[in-house]
Length: 225
Image (cartoon, rainbow, N blue to C red; front, side, top):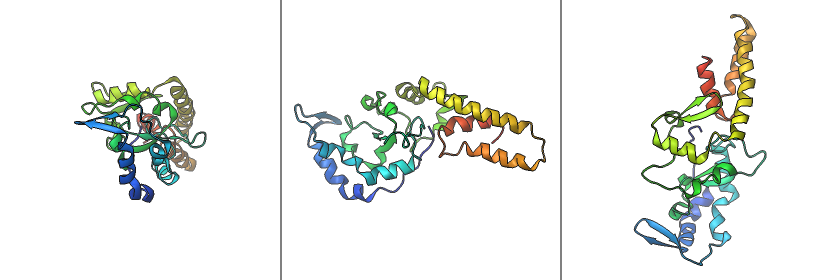
């Protein structure tokens, strides 16, 4: 997970957010701060799925660099990706079309159990608001919560961000980069090509790259950056 920056709200959402929210909330009752679905009242896809408009998703894809906002997997080249509600729409339907509550996620993170978790006293790490570097650290192919950081621990457990397929993909990438780092260390200082190879390695930690969090942590450990 890396810190993300919210881009300008798409025109389609800016023009329709208020009416879409009103139409959606018509299927809920509210008591205090608690929303409940009206029993037997199905929300039509034509109402519920409006946040999936292609112009809205296009901006989300761009602001997440075509990656899952949570696990940093590159998803667009193999999957359309899911529009994710940072606060779940089943407990916060009032935020179903709120721009700051929308992002892009892989299907695994989106169906991890996050959609039923909502605790304002212990919210999950929000990459648009929180800097993940203040809550997680990299231990080679593992992304681990900082000890005693309850929000990070809860986020780590619910999203299962060290699930085996993720770990194996990160490890494979790190193995490749570690070979490059070793090769760099064998080149004498002053050799012209050494700096260009170092830049090539550092580029692997660019936010656009898959799993840039653990790559950057590794390169810091190896004193490359």
